[in-house]
Image (cartoon, rainbow, N blue to C red; front, side, top):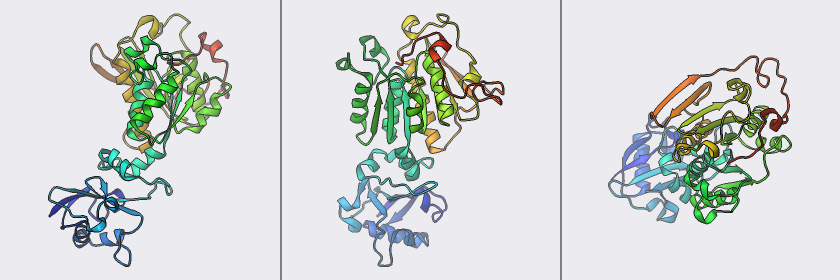
Amino acid sequence: MSVKVYIPTPFRKITGNRTFVDADGIDVNGVLRDLDQRFPGFGEMVFDGEQELLEHVNVYVNNHEIASLEGPETPVSDGDELAVIPAIAGGAGPSSTVMTPEMVERYSRHLIMDQVGPLGQRKLIDGKVLAVGAGGLGSPVLVYLAAAGIGTIGVADFDVVDRSNLQRQIIHGTSDIGRLKVDSAKDRILEMNPNINVITHTSPLTSDNAMEIIPEYDVIINGADNFATRYLINDAAFLAEKVLVDGSIFLFEGQVTTFFPGEGCYRCLYPSPPPPGMVPSCSEAGVLGVLPGTVGAIQATEAIKVLLEQGEPLKNRLLLYDALAMDFRTVKIRRDPQCPLCGDAPTVTKLIDYEEFCGSPFHEN
Protein backbone atom coordinates (compact mmCIF):
# COMPACT_ATOMS: atom_id res chain seq x y z
CA MET A 1 0.00 0.00 0.00
CA SER A 2 1.35 3.44 -0.90
CA VAL A 3 0.61 6.32 1.47
CA LYS A 4 1.63 9.95 1.64
CA VAL A 5 3.65 10.83 4.73
CA TYR A 6 3.94 14.32 6.19
CA ILE A 7 7.47 14.98 7.46
CA PRO A 8 7.82 17.59 10.25
CA THR A 9 10.47 20.28 10.01
CA PRO A 10 12.98 18.67 12.47
CA PHE A 11 13.01 15.46 10.37
CA ARG A 12 13.34 17.04 6.93
CA LYS A 13 17.13 17.00 6.98
CA ILE A 14 16.72 13.22 6.60
CA THR A 15 14.32 13.48 3.63
CA GLY A 16 16.15 16.15 1.64
CA ASN A 17 13.96 18.94 3.01
CA ARG A 18 10.84 17.37 1.53
CA THR A 19 7.55 18.05 3.31
CA PHE A 20 5.78 14.98 1.89
CA VAL A 21 7.20 11.63 0.83
CA ASP A 22 5.58 8.43 -0.38
CA ALA A 23 6.09 5.15 1.46
CA ASP A 24 4.81 1.59 1.29
CA GLY A 25 3.40 -0.67 3.98
CA ILE A 26 0.28 -2.47 5.09
CA ASP A 27 0.29 -0.79 8.50
CA VAL A 28 1.88 2.17 10.29
CA ASN A 29 4.84 0.14 11.48
CA GLY A 30 5.54 -1.08 7.96
CA VAL A 31 5.37 2.45 6.55
CA LEU A 32 7.83 3.74 9.15
CA ARG A 33 10.21 0.85 8.45
CA ASP A 34 10.00 1.59 4.75
CA LEU A 35 10.86 5.22 5.43
CA ASP A 36 13.92 4.10 7.37
CA GLN A 37 15.01 2.03 4.39
CA ARG A 38 14.54 4.92 1.99
CA PHE A 39 15.97 7.58 4.27
CA PRO A 40 18.66 6.09 6.52
CA GLY A 41 18.57 7.66 9.96
CA PHE A 42 14.81 8.18 9.97
CA GLY A 43 14.27 5.19 12.21
CA GLU A 44 16.57 6.59 14.86
CA MET A 45 14.32 9.65 15.10
CA VAL A 46 11.12 7.66 15.71
CA PHE A 47 12.17 4.35 17.33
CA ASP A 48 13.96 3.61 20.60
CA GLY A 49 16.51 0.84 21.19
CA GLU A 50 13.73 -1.70 21.54
CA GLN A 51 12.31 -0.63 18.18
CA GLU A 52 9.27 0.85 19.88
CA LEU A 53 7.92 4.28 18.95
CA LEU A 54 9.54 7.03 21.00
CA GLU A 55 7.17 8.51 23.55
CA HIS A 56 7.69 12.06 22.30
CA VAL A 57 6.68 11.18 18.73
CA ASN A 58 3.01 11.02 17.75
CA VAL A 59 1.81 9.37 14.56
CA TYR A 60 -1.52 10.16 12.89
CA VAL A 61 -3.41 8.38 10.14
CA ASN A 62 -5.84 10.69 8.35
CA ASN A 63 -5.64 13.07 11.34
CA HIS A 64 -6.40 10.34 13.90
CA GLU A 65 -3.75 9.55 16.50
CA ILE A 66 -2.82 5.86 16.21
CA ALA A 67 -3.16 5.39 19.98
CA SER A 68 -6.90 5.81 19.45
CA LEU A 69 -6.81 3.26 16.62
CA GLU A 70 -4.66 0.11 16.64
CA GLY A 71 -1.30 1.64 17.50
CA PRO A 72 1.64 0.80 15.20
CA GLU A 73 -0.44 -2.06 13.77
CA THR A 74 -3.06 0.37 12.44
CA PRO A 75 -3.69 -0.71 8.83
CA VAL A 76 -3.28 1.77 5.99
CA SER A 77 -4.73 1.88 2.50
CA ASP A 78 -3.73 3.48 -0.77
CA GLY A 79 -4.30 7.24 -0.59
CA ASP A 80 -4.14 7.45 3.21
CA GLU A 81 -2.12 10.25 4.76
CA LEU A 82 0.22 9.59 7.65
CA ALA A 83 1.81 12.35 9.74
CA VAL A 84 4.80 11.97 12.05
CA ILE A 85 4.77 14.77 14.59
CA PRO A 86 7.08 15.28 17.58
CA ALA A 87 4.92 15.78 20.67
CA ILE A 88 7.27 18.35 22.20
CA ALA A 89 9.36 20.80 20.26
CA GLY A 90 10.57 24.33 20.55
CA GLY A 91 12.08 27.36 18.91
CA ALA A 92 14.69 29.09 21.04
CA GLY A 93 13.87 26.67 23.87
CA PRO A 94 11.63 23.70 24.56
CA SER A 95 7.89 24.31 24.45
CA SER A 96 5.56 22.70 26.95
CA THR A 97 2.76 22.63 24.39
CA VAL A 98 1.57 19.18 23.40
CA MET A 99 -1.03 19.07 20.65
CA THR A 100 -3.93 16.74 21.27
CA PRO A 101 -5.41 14.66 18.44
CA GLU A 102 -8.28 17.18 18.30
CA MET A 103 -5.82 20.03 17.86
CA VAL A 104 -3.88 18.18 15.17
CA GLU A 105 -7.09 17.68 13.22
CA ARG A 106 -8.19 21.28 13.81
CA TYR A 107 -4.88 22.77 12.64
CA SER A 108 -4.13 20.14 9.98
CA ARG A 109 -4.02 22.69 7.14
CA HIS A 110 -1.40 24.66 9.08
CA LEU A 111 0.63 21.59 9.96
CA ILE A 112 1.22 20.68 6.31
CA MET A 113 2.55 24.16 5.46
CA ASP A 114 6.31 24.60 5.32
CA GLN A 115 5.96 28.08 6.83
CA VAL A 116 3.96 26.81 9.81
CA GLY A 117 4.24 23.10 10.53
CA PRO A 118 4.19 21.69 14.08
CA LEU A 119 6.81 24.13 15.38
CA GLY A 120 5.02 27.15 13.96
CA GLN A 121 1.65 26.00 15.26
CA ARG A 122 3.16 25.71 18.71
CA LYS A 123 4.37 29.29 18.39
CA LEU A 124 0.80 30.35 17.68
CA ILE A 125 -0.54 28.29 20.58
CA ASP A 126 2.04 29.86 22.89
CA GLY A 127 1.36 33.35 21.49
CA LYS A 128 -0.46 36.13 23.32
CA VAL A 129 -2.29 38.80 21.32
CA LEU A 130 -4.33 41.74 22.61
CA ALA A 131 -7.12 43.14 20.44
CA VAL A 132 -8.03 46.68 21.45
CA GLY A 133 -11.67 47.00 20.51
CA ALA A 134 -14.22 44.25 19.85
CA GLY A 135 -16.05 46.20 17.16
CA GLY A 136 -15.67 46.53 13.40
CA LEU A 137 -11.96 45.76 13.19
CA GLY A 138 -11.81 43.67 16.34
CA SER A 139 -14.48 41.26 15.05
CA PRO A 140 -12.55 39.74 12.12
CA VAL A 141 -9.31 40.04 14.07
CA LEU A 142 -10.67 37.95 16.94
CA VAL A 143 -12.39 35.43 14.69
CA TYR A 144 -9.25 34.70 12.69
CA LEU A 145 -6.90 34.71 15.69
CA ALA A 146 -9.13 32.14 17.37
CA ALA A 147 -9.37 30.01 14.23
CA ALA A 148 -5.59 30.09 13.83
CA GLY A 149 -5.09 28.83 17.37
CA ILE A 150 -3.54 31.82 19.11
CA GLY A 151 -3.38 30.42 22.63
CA THR A 152 -4.10 33.57 24.61
CA ILE A 153 -6.32 36.32 23.24
CA GLY A 154 -7.00 39.50 25.16
CA VAL A 155 -10.10 41.56 24.35
CA ALA A 156 -10.23 45.17 25.55
CA ASP A 157 -13.54 47.00 25.20
CA PHE A 158 -15.99 48.59 27.65
CA ASP A 159 -18.89 49.16 25.26
CA VAL A 160 -22.08 47.12 24.87
CA VAL A 161 -23.52 45.66 21.68
CA ASP A 162 -25.94 47.96 19.87
CA ARG A 163 -28.21 47.03 16.97
CA SER A 164 -26.35 49.48 14.72
CA ASN A 165 -23.13 47.52 15.34
CA LEU A 166 -24.41 44.39 13.63
CA GLN A 167 -23.98 45.83 10.12
CA ARG A 168 -20.21 45.26 10.45
CA GLN A 169 -19.31 43.78 13.86
CA ILE A 170 -19.67 40.16 12.83
CA ILE A 171 -18.55 38.62 16.10
CA HIS A 172 -21.83 39.73 17.71
CA GLY A 173 -25.42 38.70 16.98
CA THR A 174 -28.91 39.99 17.56
CA SER A 175 -29.20 38.04 20.80
CA ASP A 176 -26.11 39.88 22.10
CA ILE A 177 -27.69 43.35 21.97
CA GLY A 178 -27.18 45.01 25.35
CA ARG A 179 -24.38 42.65 26.41
CA LEU A 180 -20.80 43.72 26.99
CA LYS A 181 -18.90 43.29 23.76
CA VAL A 182 -16.08 41.46 25.53
CA ASP A 183 -18.54 38.87 26.87
CA SER A 184 -20.18 38.39 23.48
CA ALA A 185 -16.78 38.13 21.79
CA LYS A 186 -15.51 35.63 24.37
CA ASP A 187 -18.51 33.36 23.83
CA ARG A 188 -17.99 33.43 20.07
CA ILE A 189 -14.24 32.76 20.36
CA LEU A 190 -14.75 29.75 22.61
CA GLU A 191 -17.51 28.44 20.38
CA MET A 192 -15.06 28.52 17.48
CA ASN A 193 -12.10 27.15 19.40
CA PRO A 194 -12.40 25.91 22.99
CA ASN A 195 -8.60 25.67 23.26
CA ILE A 196 -8.24 29.46 23.55
CA ASN A 197 -7.57 31.30 26.82
CA VAL A 198 -9.64 34.49 26.52
CA ILE A 199 -8.82 37.39 28.85
CA THR A 200 -11.33 40.23 28.94
CA HIS A 201 -10.53 43.83 29.89
CA THR A 202 -13.71 45.79 30.55
CA SER A 203 -12.23 49.01 31.94
CA PRO A 204 -11.32 51.78 29.50
CA LEU A 205 -7.63 51.72 28.66
CA THR A 206 -6.01 54.79 30.18
CA SER A 207 -2.59 56.05 31.15
CA ASP A 208 -3.26 54.56 34.59
CA ASN A 209 -3.78 50.94 33.52
CA ALA A 210 -2.31 50.54 30.01
CA MET A 211 1.15 49.61 31.27
CA GLU A 212 -0.39 46.91 33.44
CA ILE A 213 -2.11 45.30 30.46
CA ILE A 214 0.03 45.86 27.34
CA PRO A 215 3.24 44.19 28.64
CA GLU A 216 1.38 40.91 29.19
CA TYR A 217 1.02 40.32 25.43
CA ASP A 218 3.38 39.63 22.50
CA VAL A 219 1.48 41.56 19.82
CA ILE A 220 -1.01 44.41 20.16
CA ILE A 221 -3.68 44.94 17.51
CA ASN A 222 -5.24 48.39 17.60
CA GLY A 223 -8.82 48.60 16.41
CA ALA A 224 -9.78 51.76 18.33
CA ASP A 225 -11.89 54.34 16.52
CA ASN A 226 -10.66 57.50 18.24
CA PHE A 227 -7.35 59.29 18.36
CA ALA A 228 -7.01 59.40 22.15
CA THR A 229 -6.95 55.60 22.39
CA ARG A 230 -4.89 55.24 19.23
CA TYR A 231 -2.05 57.42 20.57
CA LEU A 232 -2.29 55.81 24.00
CA ILE A 233 -1.90 52.29 22.58
CA ASN A 234 0.94 53.42 20.33
CA ASP A 235 2.89 54.92 23.21
CA ALA A 236 2.21 52.04 25.59
CA ALA A 237 3.25 49.43 23.00
CA PHE A 238 6.47 51.32 22.31
CA LEU A 239 7.31 51.75 25.99
CA ALA A 240 6.55 48.06 26.62
CA GLU A 241 8.63 47.06 23.56
CA LYS A 242 5.72 45.26 21.89
CA VAL A 243 4.85 44.91 18.21
CA LEU A 244 1.82 47.01 17.28
CA VAL A 245 -0.44 46.27 14.31
CA ASP A 246 -2.43 49.44 13.69
CA GLY A 247 -5.54 49.58 11.51
CA SER A 248 -8.14 52.22 10.72
CA ILE A 249 -11.23 52.52 8.52
CA PHE A 250 -13.39 55.32 7.14
CA LEU A 251 -16.22 55.17 4.60
CA PHE A 252 -14.65 53.01 1.84
CA GLU A 253 -10.98 53.29 2.84
CA GLY A 254 -8.67 51.49 5.22
CA GLN A 255 -5.08 51.70 6.43
CA VAL A 256 -2.81 49.11 8.07
CA THR A 257 0.79 49.22 9.25
CA THR A 258 2.94 47.31 11.73
CA PHE A 259 5.28 49.03 14.13
CA PHE A 260 8.25 47.25 15.67
CA PRO A 261 9.85 48.73 18.80
CA GLY A 262 12.53 51.25 17.91
CA GLU A 263 11.70 51.21 14.18
CA GLY A 264 9.04 53.89 14.00
CA CYS A 265 5.67 54.49 15.60
CA TYR A 266 2.28 56.08 14.97
CA ARG A 267 3.66 59.47 16.00
CA CYS A 268 6.22 59.22 13.19
CA LEU A 269 3.36 58.74 10.74
CA TYR A 270 1.02 61.30 12.30
CA PRO A 271 2.91 63.53 14.79
CA SER A 272 -0.29 65.06 16.12
CA PRO A 273 -4.02 64.35 15.78
CA PRO A 274 -6.30 66.52 13.66
CA PRO A 275 -8.30 69.19 15.44
CA PRO A 276 -11.49 67.90 17.10
CA GLY A 277 -14.30 67.60 14.58
CA MET A 278 -12.11 67.73 11.46
CA VAL A 279 -12.23 63.94 10.93
CA PRO A 280 -15.70 62.51 11.66
CA SER A 281 -16.04 59.11 13.32
CA CYS A 282 -17.67 56.12 11.65
CA SER A 283 -20.84 56.81 13.62
CA GLU A 284 -20.94 60.30 12.11
CA ALA A 285 -19.85 59.60 8.52
CA GLY A 286 -20.64 55.89 8.14
CA VAL A 287 -18.55 52.94 7.00
CA LEU A 288 -19.08 50.21 4.42
CA GLY A 289 -20.03 47.12 6.42
CA VAL A 290 -17.56 44.76 4.73
CA LEU A 291 -14.63 47.20 4.91
CA PRO A 292 -13.49 46.28 8.45
CA GLY A 293 -13.61 42.63 7.42
CA THR A 294 -10.88 43.20 4.86
CA VAL A 295 -8.77 45.47 7.05
CA GLY A 296 -9.20 43.36 10.18
CA ALA A 297 -8.23 40.19 8.31
CA ILE A 298 -5.03 41.93 7.19
CA GLN A 299 -4.30 42.94 10.79
CA ALA A 300 -4.78 39.34 11.95
CA THR A 301 -2.50 38.15 9.15
CA GLU A 302 0.22 40.55 10.27
CA ALA A 303 0.00 39.35 13.89
CA ILE A 304 0.20 35.70 12.83
CA LYS A 305 3.22 36.41 10.60
CA VAL A 306 4.95 38.18 13.48
CA LEU A 307 4.40 35.23 15.82
CA LEU A 308 5.57 32.76 13.16
CA GLU A 309 8.52 35.00 12.20
CA GLN A 310 7.58 34.42 8.57
CA GLY A 311 7.17 36.68 5.56
CA GLU A 312 7.46 40.43 5.24
CA PRO A 313 5.34 42.38 7.72
CA LEU A 314 4.17 45.90 6.96
CA LYS A 315 7.19 47.34 8.74
CA ASN A 316 8.01 50.85 7.53
CA ARG A 317 5.12 50.53 5.07
CA LEU A 318 1.56 51.80 5.17
CA LEU A 319 -0.99 49.72 3.28
CA LEU A 320 -3.80 51.79 1.76
CA TYR A 321 -7.01 50.09 0.67
CA ASP A 322 -9.67 51.79 -1.46
CA ALA A 323 -12.72 49.53 -1.63
CA LEU A 324 -14.49 51.66 -4.24
CA ALA A 325 -11.59 51.42 -6.67
CA MET A 326 -10.61 47.95 -5.36
CA ASP A 327 -7.08 49.23 -5.14
CA PHE A 328 -4.29 48.28 -2.74
CA ARG A 329 -1.11 50.31 -2.57
CA THR A 330 1.70 50.75 -0.09
CA VAL A 331 3.70 53.82 0.73
CA LYS A 332 6.97 53.91 2.59
CA ILE A 333 7.09 55.38 6.07
CA ARG A 334 10.14 55.93 8.23
CA ARG A 335 11.18 56.47 11.78
CA ASP A 336 11.34 60.19 12.45
CA PRO A 337 14.54 61.12 14.31
CA GLN A 338 12.59 64.08 15.73
CA CYS A 339 9.72 61.91 16.98
CA PRO A 340 8.92 62.83 20.60
CA LEU A 341 8.43 59.15 21.45
CA CYS A 342 10.87 57.01 19.44
CA GLY A 343 13.21 59.72 18.12
CA ASP A 344 16.81 60.39 19.02
CA ALA A 345 15.91 62.76 21.87
CA PRO A 346 12.49 61.61 23.11
CA THR A 347 10.40 63.91 25.26
CA VAL A 348 7.57 61.43 25.82
CA THR A 349 8.98 58.89 28.24
CA LYS A 350 5.76 57.93 29.99
CA LEU A 351 2.07 57.91 29.19
CA ILE A 352 0.42 61.31 29.07
CA ASP A 353 -3.06 62.80 29.27
CA TYR A 354 -4.35 61.68 25.86
CA GLU A 355 -7.78 63.17 26.16
CA GLU A 356 -6.21 66.59 26.52
CA PHE A 357 -3.64 65.83 23.78
CA CYS A 358 -6.28 64.75 21.25
CA GLY A 359 -9.18 66.83 22.45
CA SER A 360 -11.48 63.80 22.30
CA PRO A 361 -12.89 61.30 24.78
CA PHE A 362 -11.87 57.64 25.09
CA HIS A 363 -13.88 54.79 23.66
CA GLU A 364 -13.16 51.66 21.64
CA ASN A 365 -15.51 49.85 19.27
